[in-house]
Amino acid sequence: MASTGPNTSSCTIGAPGSSATTTVTDLAASREFYVDVLGLTVTEEDDETIYLRSLEEFIHHNLVLRKGPVAAVAAFSYRVRTPEDLDRAVAFYRELGCRVERREDGFVKGIGDSVRVEDPLGFPYEFFYAVEHVERLAWRYDLHTPGALVRLDHFNQVTPDVPKAVRHYQDLGFRVTEDIQDADGVVYAAWMRRKPTVHDTATTGGDGPRMHHVAFATHEKHNILAICDKLGALRRSDAIERGPGRHGVSGNPVVPSWYTDASLVLDLDGNPQPVVARTDASEMAVTIGADGFSYTRKDDTEEYKLGNQL
Ligand SMILES: [Fe+2]
Image (tube, rainbow, N blue to C red):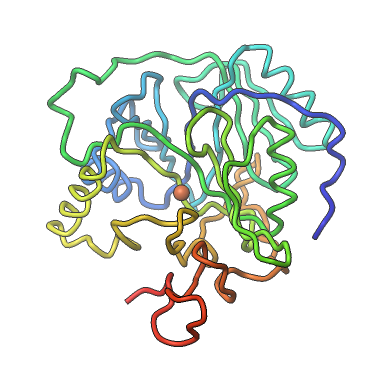
């Protein structure tokens, strides 16, 4: 394992709300998928950028799509609890030797004073407090379709050294809720929360820094079935990687692409961060009880292995 680096200070940052800014190569195709298919609401848009929000979001946006030369993440954004937390974030990342930028008017519309950093793992993180509030959609029943997305739930970040990532995000105030590790102590993935939800972000062991997914929550399970029905009816079922079903730590197979496929992340100049290969074992190659790519029965070595796909 690599060492944790010079994390001599800690910084407690709240995360009552979050958003993601991504670049996309085809803005019209992205709009069609996120607005027409998934039903996110457009707060504001122009020829370059679309600001979207889910049904329970009451700030300007929780997903920004911006036209760019490569599909990538420009910022994983967290709202902090007080304006002073932004000063703490600047001091925290400067002490770590990270690149830090602050803009009083924000980097995107709808958000005020903001801090963007390239964190020690290479991920672009953003912190903000002041926001523009927009119409609450709670009573806009015309928008409440069976597959409604209600809030941005969490990020999934792919990084070669999960324990190093966990130590860094713990210094930032996150707590680990679950992880996957084998009998030798190799950690394959960890889930972390800053507020009392299941998790706000996850780090998965693989070549990184990259982003595997940004997750939105629905009210109920049946809403997910409705999304699958809609994708099927639109002949877009190839947009479903797996499921519907449980995944991950709760005794069920994880999602294979966690360890293989992911999107690039950008530095503060908008250039893709170089990807570093993972040298620790991959969960794809091992069997870890019920949590990983295991066989149904403990001593089986043939037939169907969980995590495989038909
Ligand atoms: Fe996830």
